[in-house]
Image 1 (cartoon, rainbow, N blue to C red):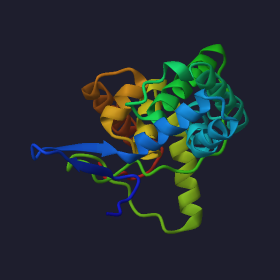
Image 2 (image 1 turned 180 degrees about the vertical axis):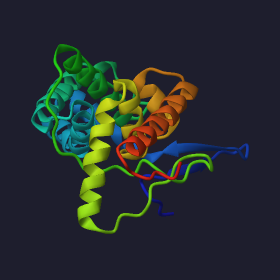
Image 3 (image 1 turned 30 degrees about the vertical axis):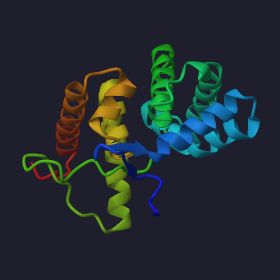
Length: 213
C-alpha cells in the first residue's frame, strides 16, 4: 500500500483496532537517531529541510532578514546541542520552531531590529463567518501596497501574537502545534491568532484598507 509520507498510516492489530502512525515523525526520528550516532549528513539534512521555514518565522518576528539568517544558524546550533533531549514521539519541526521562537524573542528583548521586506501571508478569510475577509488584489501594484501595509501592521502586534499568526498562516500549523511551540495551551494559541487577526484588521482599516469589517 502506498501513502503520502505527510499523511498518517493506520496500522491494524489482531484486536481489530488501528493506531495512527505519522510517517513524517518516524522519518524525523530516524534522522535524529542518525545525527546522534555521529552522522553529519543526517543533521545537514535536518538543516536543509527546515532552514527556510525557520528563517521565515524569525524574519517575520524580527523584521530583519539578515538577523533572521544569523538567528536561524543559532537555532540549529542550539538544536544540535540539545538533540539528545528531543522527544522522538513529537514533531521535530515543532521543537525547532519553539527554539527559533525563543531565540527570536531573546533578540527582540536585546534590541529592536529595523524593518525589512516580507511576503504577504494570507491572514484573512475562511475560518469563521465573523472573521474579516480581505478583498482580492490582482493588481501587482495594489498587492505590493497591501503587503507593505500588512508588514507595518504586523510590526505593531505583540510578539506572541505575531508569532502565533505567522505560524498559523505562513507555516499552516494547527493550534495544538502552535501552542506547543509557544508554550501555551491550545485554547490560548487559538485566542492569540483570533486577536491578532482582529488587530490586523483594525490597523489595516485605520490605514485605509477595506478588510470587510
